[in-house]
Length: 124
Image (tube, rainbow, N blue to C red):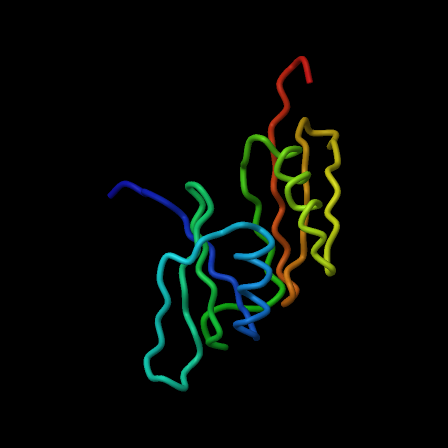
């Protein structure tokens, strides 16, 4: 067996709030949506470049309040793009860490935390 990809699953409680945050604010795209029946909770996959996330309204799938870290490049430009959207619930900052990264952590409306992390080169 060879591992191909890890896909985190994050708990959501409100579909519209999830889409406003992940799609409209962070810039992810919806790959697919699934419901077992019309009035069942939503399970969907979203993506941003090569990052895939699963968002679920099913209470048994995962625990709310999770934290994930995404290894990225171009973090400062992405932050400027997010700030330009003037999303009323978040104005994320970028911090330089002691372990040689730039990091930006954003909490979603459901208590999950997404940290975008960019490794610094020697001359940064």
